[in-house]
Amino acid sequence: MSDTPQPAPSSPLIPLSLIACGQWVRVRDVTADAKSSHRLQDLGIVRGARLRMVQDDGRLLLVAVGDTRIGLARGLAQRVRVQIEEECAA
Image (cartoon, rainbow, N blue to C red; front, side, top):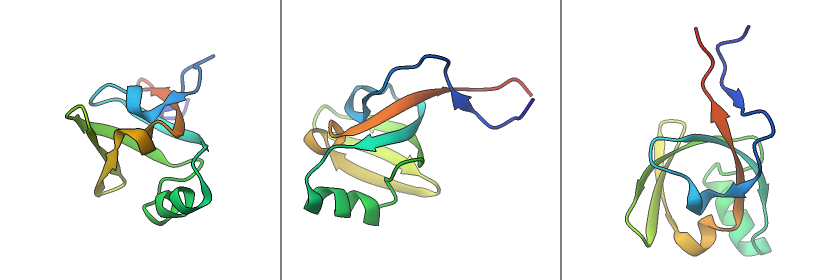
């Protein structure tokens, strides 16, 4: 069995804005307009990217993409559909 976290079985796609702090997710879809989608792509938030929610102050979300932390407005984060990952036992 792989130590790589996998999407939880039958885990639905949910907006990034609803993820709890500390949770790992995998980006599955981006439904933003072309300009916003391009901006997200520049930040590394693309299909298949693994993210971790770091902080949610109600308006701004702080997410980790690799070794980088990125601030996202809640409205933009709502356009990013993610799947929660479950940690695999070592």
